[in-house]
Image (cartoon, rainbow over all chains, first blue to last red; front, side, top):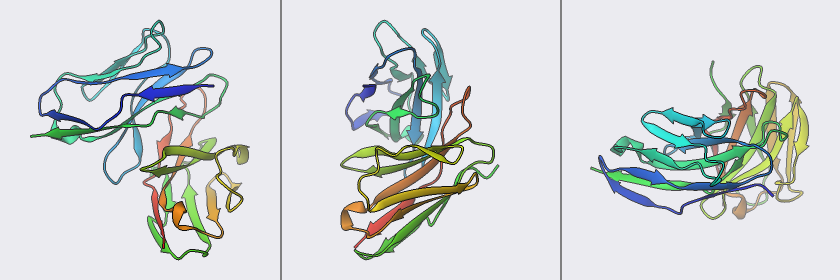
Length: 113
Length: 114
């Protein structure tokens, strides 16, 4: 079946460090890929997305490139801030699954001043 | 737009009691989802609706859980009877459907069953 695997957390970084959170997926067909972010005490919100191979999603300094050859969608940011501390979820949607998303287990990021 | 609205935001109840969680999706969205989040199990999809019709309820853990969507602007998730292991944060999300397919999440209901 379809699935999403993320690197385990927690990830702890110092402010201004480079961030990578790995995400790989298993799916039939050509899924759309998403990163969601959950700040403490809140619901998830969309961070970025990519709908086809080689697309790059970007938002708030975060980027992720849809790599079909490696079935990956790694999240990166060049310089993290304390305010980026949150849980990050990678997700996929297959074309024939309506609105249903399949989420990874989430990766907690903690950024220290 | 007010976004997805959930009520109550916090619920504390005793084992054996009935619990009803409520959700108002974003107007015009065709899909509605109920999720449960715990430290142990992460984010789990319980059930989702398309145009008020349940499409996939395979994530509903037991018969104690039931969900309804009587109209396009309201859904409930009911637990009867509740148990301590049901303690979690329950999220509702809605989605406008193809081609956008972005899910918009509510703030969640934190349920504690004593």
